Length: 536
Ligand code: TEU
Figure 1 (cartoon, rainbow, N blue to C red):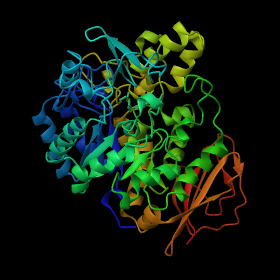
Figure 2: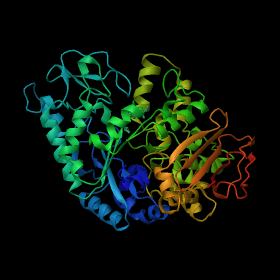
Figure 3: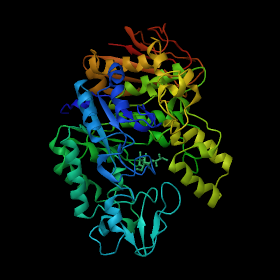
Figure 4: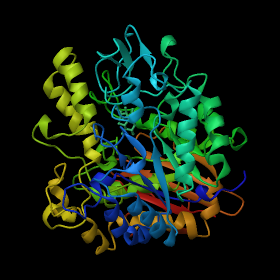
């Protein structure tokens, strides 16, 4: 496989509105990110993936864009953006922007024009029908909204303020290609591509994801834009499996660098999806993550537990009580020793946890409120309390509470009123305390990132083979990583109960561990104990 810079990179995702506020308006901003570049440099990340900072009415916190080529005043200006790119690059950190082109905001000029009349030049930038179908929005309710002016319905896979673009229109393709190049010429190093699997949709055939036109459209986009630059592109593709991932990420296909797959992230979804969560099938988790290690022949994998849409992993599959630190380090070790590009979501590196607000109205997320209207109020599929349980465990606002920098007021995130309530545990969980504690989760992430990038084991971790071990064990996740030079053993206890193991190994060295006295003989794994052993 031809080596690429992003094979070796570690990406840090910033959700700007919750990262660091320098103006006192309670919303994080670009200057707040610039202020924290040295912190990210200390962690050792190479790339920042910036969730949207473009002009937006903020109905979906920026994933509803009204001007792709300007910065929303909430976050700053284009000059601030240029300065972030420059200051990051000076620290050898690249900036990857969020490309949200399945839909725009209903306040985008294109949509304002399109809804004026049926023969407006921009009409076919969007998807209009005389009658709605039974397609539903991801955010609850119908995916169709009636437009009084022209007497037709328009399609929106998400909120009604997010009308889907018609990607069969060559003018749409050209407009987006031009915008992509405009940003690449500004010096960014790639894109995360929001629900990119949806741009090949065929509405009348009710094909939404992975449509037949998807890959031709991506190949055209690659050829007209980022294929002419040495940049990272990662597609958000909820329905992908390794076979589909090959289509996106095999270099010969000239589409994307890699994709985010979500097979592992829906394992504990119940009858009504994440709103009715169920027990994780641990063996299935091991099987799926291992499949993604071995079945991607020519493509490239991404590795993540968290993002701005997902609950905090230490609360979801770790232990956010007495074993918060051990279990967070365990989860980091299991993920970061795998093959693929790792993504760290803001706050994951200090093991921030889920939050539990007192009432539904304290939550901000359009998905939470839209789905509540649909499955609780209108269709009574589940009760209010059942839904709130789903929000506590799986709601997107779990990931969006402001970053916890210090134990001071508002966790040092803002000196104004935060746009979303903080998690009150910032008193115990914050960056300042983590940096002052050599045994903090932060330093485990730093160690794992350094091991991947700068150690004698780098190539083994990045390109080496993978073998799952103890695959039927109900509590232990163990695998080996090996090549002609090294053999590493990664083993973790996913539970708070001690596990005795008889691996018949006598390792040469304990390279990483979340306990200070892990034995090279490794006969007993303590609660959430995880380690990396040098076998050869
Ligand atoms: O998310 C795609 C998406 O469908 C997720 O929101 C998913 O539906 C949900 O989290 C699982 O229940 C992308 C962005 O990441 C998200 O923030 C946006 O809200 C969405 O697209 C629309 O742009």
